[in-house]
Length: 314
Ligand SMILES: Cc1ncc(COP(=O)(O)O)c(C=O)c1O
Image: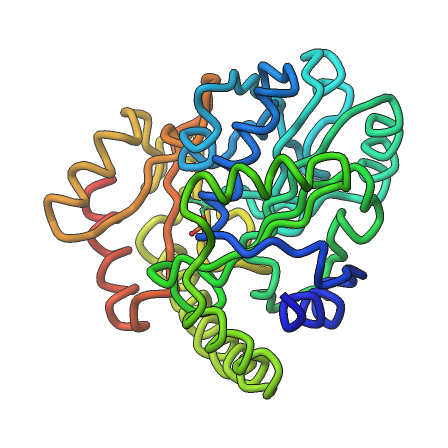
């Protein structure tokens, strides 16, 4: 917990006492624990970004998840107010899946919303991966009393480690600790000790600097392949993260695609190319699109995969 508190202070501008840090089995478990505690507190809905992660929405069940549209500045706080929800889940540093950063004015509006009683759940899932823009401070750094902050090693090291952290406002801490104790008595100590060593020795930071160079090359390869094979596609969120989202323009040029994106993703999978249809991450009607991860493939494989998509789009 001490190592995580230092890491968050160095990398995310969050001032936290080690006692404020709860170690969990990934953001997924942080969300499940929050669901239990919020339900017991009478909360019935957590608003979510639209588009927004399907996985996150699944973890939030059985709470209602009213969708709040995201535009070029992030979540629309006026639309959030209109839902009447008292809690919202946000990915402010790099919105999933659009890659938009929550802007300064929106942060101020959100601050006002929290002053009126709103609670933010901040999913800081890939904030450390950025290429063409400076670091974006965590919301938790601005609003420690109103933000439940969740992060994990899933995008830093590997999702299979199932290791993460949750920082909650004091009012929720005891209930969250109880929920964690009743779930599994605590996260395994050995991976925690390994992570603490990696964080405190500087090895994790060195590793991140190294993989950032790899990821940038992969991202550039993907953008180049999209220009070649899918010229009608619009690329979103390239400045940071580990994926690109593309949407298809409604034109008759090569790259336009008007059939359901689920059909395109299924056809790609049949050819060994795994992508998410944008529809998985939406609750409202939207233009067809795909979410394309680039972290786990080499540049040649990326070009080949996008080539397959180009052929399928026709
Ligand atoms: C945006 C987002 N954040 C977090 C998670 C879960 O992350 P973790 O591996 O830390 O449990 C998911 C996957 O469900 C996700 O889509």
